[in-house]
Image (cartoon, rainbow, N blue to C red; front, side, top):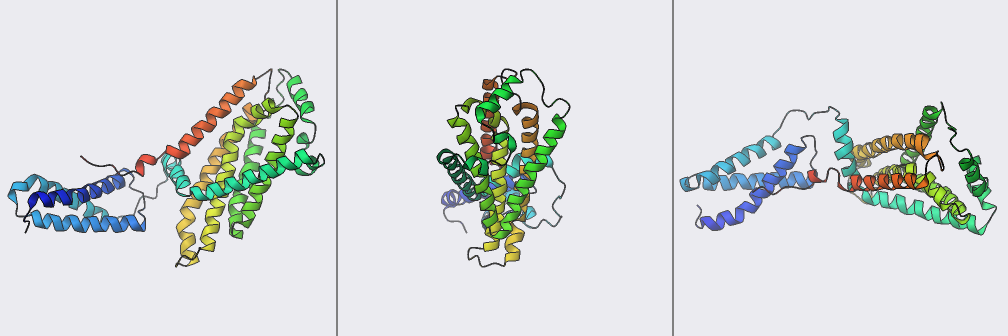
Length: 337
């Protein structure tokens, strides 16, 4: 029996709102899998709502509240006792726009570790290039980077309006995509070495990047470097870091960190996140490959540097906003009126 009806409603309504919000979240994303804590919360709130409904059954003066609670309990019952198999159809746009950035944010610590290792390698490579002139020939993996930056800039800009990649843009773009995707998948797969291989690969990539940046900056070619690297690098470099992030997530599951569950269970748990991250990386690298072949390889006077730099900066801003905000509304539980 309810002695203090207003006090009962005042105490119970916040929990009804939580249940309502959780059900709305599931309704907006039917394929979402609840975490263990969310499932426990849903079950608790459902049982509490059932108990509250039983207390209100004989109060005719509260028919509107009772009807609302009956509807809420029915919705919760349907979610908890659903027996149909969840849809396995692939929704590519929904997956990329919502699932991928949510997974990225959920595993952000692994991404930060990848970024720290890459930045550390960049500092090492830059310092080695500045302090030891012979280091450049050891660190630079590509022939076109071995020459003096001023010579390369003069050659690139001297080409004028000539299209160096005429008839070969698609081939060059596909080659870039294949190479970068292979490196990214390797960074992910090396997570099987408990993350050691992933860390070494990211550090080495950072060394190369730092050496190139230092070489061009100290040669007075910072504008050329920015206009050359930023349009595709603003997507390509984060994509490689996300591949490293996937590798570290895999490594974390192998290590376990004292979790009282089997390795098989840990690997099964993180598998969807690893696949989502590396799938997103593949899409980002397709875009980066197209931009590098059709845009980044053309320089002043054919293509002013300020246009290339502005384009690359805009790409980076959009990527940051996408990874930070996209799909976030699905994570937040609304508060029904």
